[in-house]
Amino acid sequence: MNKKPKMPAKSFAQIQADWQLIQSLAPRDKLKALKQIGFDVMISYESGDITLEKLELYSQILQQAVRAHSFPQRYARILSKMIADKLALTNSEPVTILAKASGKIMLSGATVMVGDPSIQTAPLIDYSDNELLALINLGQRFLFATGSDGVFDMQLRIIEANTPVLTAQEYKCVENSGQTAIISAPSGKIVITALGEIDDKDNQILQEIAPGNYKITVFVFNIPKKMRSYYIVLCKTAEPAVNHLERIDMLE
Image (cartoon, rainbow, N blue to C red; front, side, top):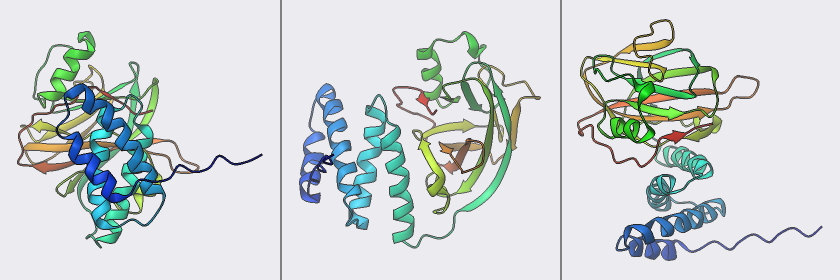
């Protein structure tokens, strides 16, 4: 059987020009163009000959393409590989882990909630998806869906960095990752639990942190011979807890 020929990769100059053009498009046209340029970036990245300049632009593009695509899993995996390559090329210092807490969370609504328990809301189980998204964009909660119920391994990790990242070695085990948002933690406590169970102390992971705002990203780990797990990584930021997400991540 003849193998399907590989699609030729666009040149870096072509992708740069396309990216500049996209900035002037109307929102609907921009959404469509982001999906195409995300695909072009993946083909170029997988063709090899990667430089730091390419990685800087390609990771910026894929961060937006992930938000625009209905099924962003492949983009997210490539983005994780790019970050690992970037860390290797820049000889970055090892990631400093300030604190971490691990445990198991039981889900009955296939949704994980992260937040400061001092921020009171109405029971989230009664919220619509749009209302939940509004809470995320206000920085009051962070949510992601797992695609199924059950018991899941999770780790909450606080690092010292400008953006939530893993170690270069850990990226080899990343199967998927979500969007980065900013969450508020005025009391200096962060809880991981099931949707609507912020006060359920028997089904949560609690970590004390310095009060303030934190960038947050979720990574899905698939380590051979081990249970799939979620690493929820936070780093402190001076930026306001305001987000512009258009959907809640599905991280199956």
